[in-house]
Length: 95
Image 1 (cartoon, rainbow, N blue to C red):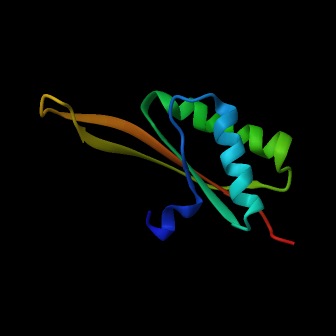
Image 2 (image 1 turned 90 degrees about the vertical axis):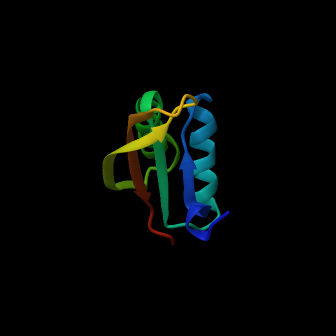
């Protein structure tokens, strides 16, 4: 796994708490920034994860940046499909 992905949590179809735990674990391992990424229908779950981390688990964490984009992916049939994506950067000062 590339080094820049060490502090990235990719949000998919699992329950939000699975991803919250992954983000909290990254902070506990000493990362100052954790990137929460999602595409398509998982975008709302990624927003929920970021808000749950900030409000309930790591109250010193802040949203540093949010970026949105459109990714082009290829379907099984070979067609190009546009899918929305989001990246939420959460930061926390390490004491």
